[in-house]
Length: 427
Ligand code: EPZ
Image 1 (cartoon, rainbow, N blue to C red):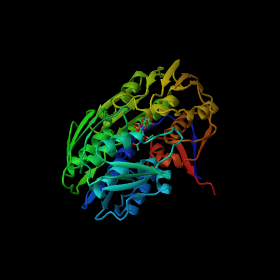
Image 2 (cartoon, rainbow, N blue to C red):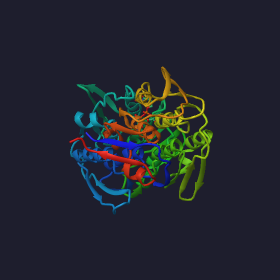
Image 3 (cartoon, helix red, strand yellow):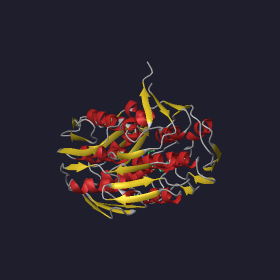
Image 4 (cartoon, rainbow, N blue to C red):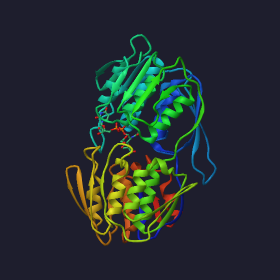
């Protein structure tokens, strides 16, 4: 298992290219199942989750062809072609490795009239149920059966009629599955209290580019009129707002200045507002944004919330940065029940953090010390890397496969702005 070694204390300065968004890519990829034409996606990040998803799609009958990228460049182009659906079963060993595999449920049901997908099971940050995915599909006319750890969904007459559903809890994945299923329904689907994340907007824009009919894009009331068929197209994945926010925190925690090339400010105003509230200077420009630390960090009070609120995927990274703020910060994690696994590891580096249920109080300290720490989930592992960038001495982050799921060529990007960071393979 690889590990990441960092010698902290360097002020990071320079430009980091922002890759395509993981959480957009993982909902755009299954759209290939919605058409018998070829679908080309550009600006795809080179990530383990993207590779795993394309292998899952191969098993369902989609061919995938990747155009290489020139050395030093980012963003691959992948052409996917599901001329026929060869299988409507997403097996346990695939879904177990990557929860987002559940996002083949809606498109397979829409294209083939049936789908059998393994229940994803929980993960480190929480139980992660899929009941809202299933309720929404039932409201659109699907018949759902749970047996032996699998969900079997059937469209009784081969195609879903569509229907209305109001989400009791905002769910990104359930909104995505419902949108993809609705795109080929025979009638109209209305989704109320739908998720509004920029990744949902990216999915709606792709469905429209494929000939779909979606209204209310960007709002919590989505109206989809199903069409007879969708055609292929060539579409670029949006930039990753969470990757951009993570590297902004690297500027903050090291007292540096990083230009985030390709970041899209209007996707991430809750993040940039929080960065500015700590005293960081955030300058938007036509190629992205620059984040500069020119004074000690101020403490913050943050509650995570569905978009356009402060994203849960940025909570761990801000916590690492706020360990160095002058005073006490208060964080509340309202989305997932167990998203503080980075706390014990940060404490081992000298952080002073009290956790009570879903709330955490971060007492600012003068500095952190390097240590051997264990990554537990994707964003927790990034918070440990951030802490290592400013900690005195060496930090070794173990189980970096978590990082590889969501951060493309992290060591290369951080080295380019002055970090002493390398990946070591264990044997
Ligand atoms: C997506 O997960 C993201 N993953 C997550 O990013 C992100 O943290 C999350 O949205 C919230 O923004 C991808 O896009 C691949 P949800 P998802 O359904 O869709 C509950 C990362 O680090 N819920 O919006 O699984 C659920 O338990 C990852 O990049 C139900 O109760 O999240 C949670 O409390 C981590 N029933 C809340 O809703 C359901 O059927 C929000 O979950 C579905 C969800």
